[in-house]
Each structure stands twice: as C-alpha cells, then as structure tokens.
Length: 99
Image (cartoon, rainbow, N blue to C red; front, side, top):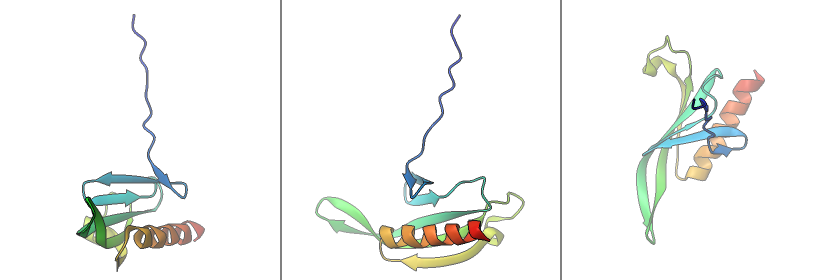
C-alpha cells in the first residue's frame, strides 16, 4: 500500500510574513490574522529586459469572510516602488497586531 504523504507548501516570506503573488496582485500577511495586505501592480517600467513595478496600490483588508470586498478595505495608499509598498505593508500589519 502506498503511504499518504501530506506535503505542506511553504510560502516566500518578507520580514517573517507570507508573501504570495498571482500575476500583478500580491498578498502579504497571514490569512488567519485580522488583517492582510493586498497590493496591485498598476504600472510597470522597463529596466533593461525586466518589467519593474512603478506604481503599486496597497490595501489593508480585514480577513472577515462575512464582509464584502469593498467593506473589508480599511486603509489604502499608493507607492512608486515595491520596496516602499512592502515597507508600508509591514508597518500596517505590525501596528494592527500590536492593537
């Protein structure tokens, strides 16, 4: 008989929190926490052969499944680099967990 092997998927992390990307949408944080960050890359700039995010919309969202997506958004911002977006996302989640 074959053994059932459960494989757990490990996510890439930034400052200890999961970072998951699907095309131009990035989710940052743990879905079981009260809040998670959604980042949408809205503009890209060519740098050599690479597309680099040059405009990112950031949304702090409640993870309560009872809320519709518009009501779940409690804070938003816009940044010009992925580093700036991740930096503000980390600050928002750190402050939320301290409350």
